[in-house]
Image (tube, rainbow, N blue to C red; front, side, top):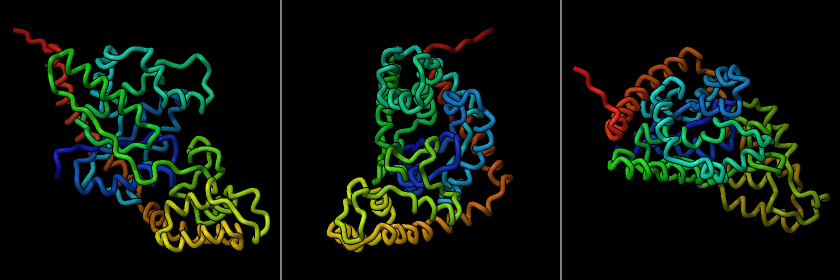
Length: 333
């Protein structure tokens, strides 16, 4: 194993979808073979915009973990844990909050984009504004140096490294490590409506747990080229959601290039194109869905419980180092 440590995770706001797979999950499967990996179910972070519905998060924790296991994430190679079961993370967050300004958090483009997407009013909660600080605590607690993210999450890594540098300089230490992003080959998968990236909250995604019939229906509804009315009409590949998904999941790139050429010239209908994608995704998702269905809640709870114990032990050691660097070590006779 390399000296690098991977820290990644997901908010338990719902089951995971194909956008998660191409953006992060696929990366994690290969990373677990090379590095120490910590995968966090980020329930506390999810509370920042779901504070009025914590039951939703609790119910989805096992579902997210089942998605992990079904695609090939191995709990023998990764530590899978629940964020709220590692209280050391919250203490680290408190220390880090003193190292960054409110104005810096407000300039974060990732937060700005999420505020717009979620239609928040001007009364943004402190918890939501400061969740990048919590994320910094998550990364640094495990000495994470490689962070699988989408392109839209890069500003969050910048904030993490700013806090790391400020901490090390302020307290004359090197206890905290800077992190580097690991981008997937497909950094973003568009939603089936073609209007935004695939998202749980926008309900415009194909989920790993979707039934075969639901997958077929979603593919049938995909946005293509509105000017491609007749089969003989030339069609546009760019902005065509079906081709976006074929680019991500169709293995035979030579055949895909031929399909694109045929579509551009005219002679390839949308229904045939969607049928090709349906066959492709059905073959890809069937074994994932079958494996997922075979995983019991009891197995998931055991994995999360044992993983959280390991994660807490590691985080406790980092917290001890942080407090020592700050001089927050009190000894009494």
